[in-house]
Amino acid sequence: MAKPNDKAELLQGTLDMLILKSLQGGPRHGYAIAQWIGATTNDALSVEEGSLYPALHRMERRGWISASWGQSESNRRAKFYELTRTGRTNLGQQVTMWGRLVSAITLVLDADPAEGRS
Image 1 (spheres, rainbow, N blue to C red):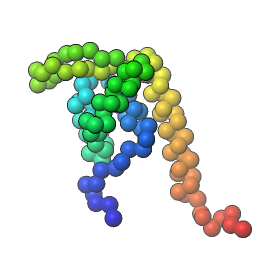
Image 2: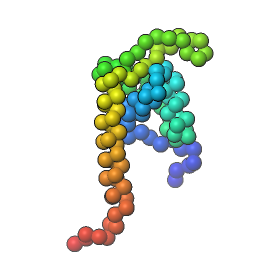
Image 3: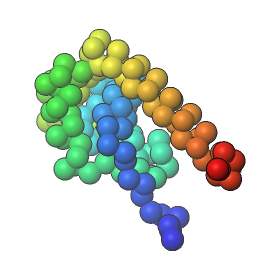
Image 4: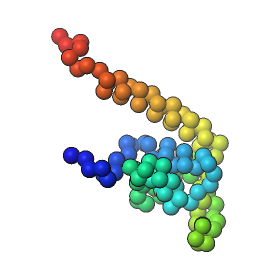
């Protein structure tokens, strides 16, 4: 049985969408991205470094984000990531696909399994 403080697991492919969404408001460094996702989901989702940084590097290679070095809030050197035009387009496509998936799953969950039985 799930406990109230259990973290939800991300479906494959959703991490990219969440990272891109976090960058819609402007550049962020990796730790700030993870913090934003956690805070926005009331800590239902957490992004571990082992997943976050490979995703950031992959998205940078694909041209969805760009990176530059800067100073963090704690005055440390940090790599800041920013959404590119291609990334904005990709985010829009991912959000549309996610909406379709959620709608389809909702139809299944709301369906009466007894209907349509032979």
